[in-house]
Length: 67
Image (cartoon, rainbow, N blue to C red; front, side):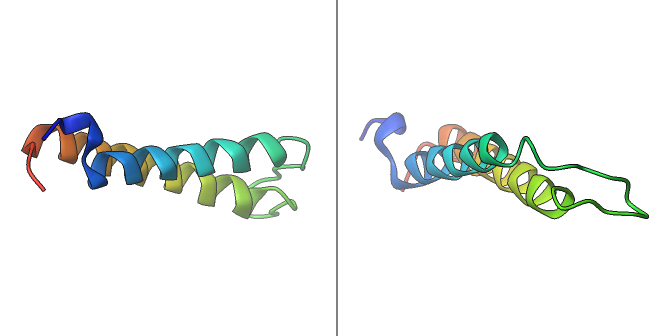
């Protein structure tokens, strides 16, 4: 099976896509600081975490090469 069509790789790309969409729609919200969080702090950190985990899942799927 092609590595780029595996379920893990495609789900990683889906996570990255959802994270990028969340970053796009939350870009107008004020970020604030870790001490005084603005309305955009938690959505931005969650979307960056989602992008990071999606990248990790995709890379592991490419390296392992099996389902």
